[in-house]
Image (cartoon, rainbow over all chains, first blue to last red; front, side, top):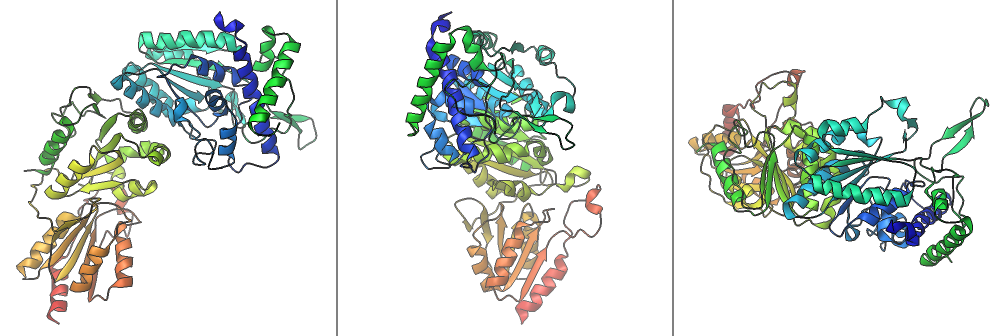
Length: 309
Length: 315
């Protein structure tokens, strides 16, 4: 696999992680007025999407979009400036974080409202069909698939043979409730099958495997002229434990938005020593000392870019 | 010619002259074709006509998505009430896309069910409420002249807007109207000029205003007849200057909202005009009647109004 030997892919995962950790540090110090949803642990799919997007492909994002914006922009500073609502920000301080799009890099639309972006992705794909264009990829989550717009949009995409990759980032949580606390299980595979759409589940956070699969899925969507639902299993990293009110132990706080208090910048930016961390998974391809030295160099580069070296 | 037939002709002419246009909606090319509104629509090469699923939220988002992709579209909707399901798109998505002056066009044309007896949903016939949510450009169509100007100018034009047509007027014969004035935005039209009274019609109340104008004329009272075809803000100068001359202002608004566009004009007139008569004709909701199937027509005491104006003019 050509990507396996491509160290730049690993560098991208590390850049996305370091960049988010820098944002987190600034968040902790109270620099941002706009709400930001970090995507620690989501780096592998964002790098994979960026890697497989062709020139005519379009991406539509949700409120948790920092990983895709970092992957497409290749730099942190304009994103940071946007979060700081500076005029030199990526969107001129018009969009902040939850709506941040970047048309010059084919992130056409980003919505802060759960499920809102799916109909827009369907329309964008219809426009691509009328004009002749590429594949539309839309990012959503396990919370947004509870919205009626998910069903409606999938129905329209399939009815009109639109090649759309519907990327469902499933981190198991909607704010502070886990799936089992709020609804019945949704079997996305059977749902997709019921419409005659494609389905694939990705897990393990291996960026190289994700790229390989995403490339195949993109081609499949085009060949079949059909939407493909891609359920990507995650743990959104950055959660923490606090003592219970009745002092009987600790309870877990799922990371949703805002700063993550326990995350600190470090040269090798691993958060979890498990497959739930895309940075940890890079150890399958690179020895720790090599990974450490690459990560250190990336951190230096990102800090230089934002004039904090 | 009947209202719906004329609209259908205007729409078809404009659509068939536009390349790469997508026309979509439920049953727009099947059955009654929205009671004739979309019958026989023809598109040019590169366009599409789509009978869609019943998915209004997605269909509103679809139009915006096509705008992002540079493709223009018109969404025909059988009832304005159905647009409730797409409100999120009207606000969030429209506010995103409007920032950059999009080149493509997206228009939603819907039928305002204002002929009564439709039950609970018919409490929502107020076009202005939809417009005000995100300051959406919107136009109501009340007669032959505004139909022509609004359809030709707006149905395919860069940007987004909604156009409301009246079910109550669907099978009525359209009257020829002459225009004295309209603003560039096609939100305010003046049809007659007279020194006896100023009549300002809001929402879809133009036919009532025209009837009042004609009845006044029978009594040798000439009136200035205006129609406001959009929500506020509208620059009221034309109407205010006219009311200052006639000193008699009649405002008619057949909306069902608690927040009427006509209130804005009334406040402005109160501030700027010394009037002999200020007559505001609006719906009066004194009980829960508005919740139940009822006639939708405004009840207007034309004789009372004419007597009142006659007395003022004689003085």
